[in-house]
Length: 273
Image (cartoon, rainbow, N blue to C red):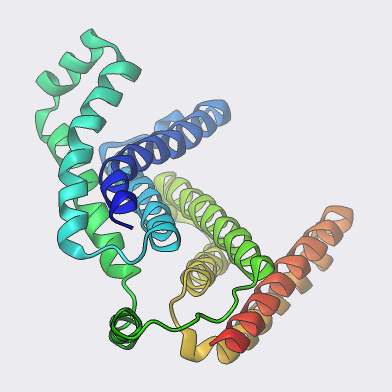
């Protein structure tokens, strides 16, 4: 256990940086391929940095929880401090020495803010995904009086991972979509467009909620959560069938599979509680 914690102290910051860089690269390439480069403003860049850093941090903290155990806040701060030099090296490697120096010399405040976001995202994720006090007490009691833990379901673990990754990906994609819409002057939208934007925001919040459920939050409300997610999906499915044609049918099938997976995950987590 001590070896795992020692290795995680160095490996998690590296995994955090790599995950953040990969997410950022994929999103930026998507923007460039779409040709909507006018939406890339300093505010958009900051929002994107926060989203990527927090998403990467949550994934890494959850991985630490599954492999090593809960990540204490103080330890997450140390890991965040270790990640900053790794971020600097990654920036130097991806941008090149000349562009890297220009970035820090021309927009030092923006660069400082982005690296500050990268630093604070890891402790924030540790707080968000921190186990409840009761779980901590149970783990301490288990150390003092070892007992045979109940068998874990590999299928349930895989299902939770799949739901978490899908929810996180859809959450980030939806957030990027909303940011792009607002970047093109959301205040000039018609009533129908505003309704569509509101529906997108509801979907984003739902996917974020599903991600938190998959990583172990809201355990006491899983029965209500699965019913709520199923109810929310009904108007979206109806809209897809009416407006989407053949593609709408495929969207409804995909939505049904997602809701079914979330429902099964909640049932499994309730049974194992």
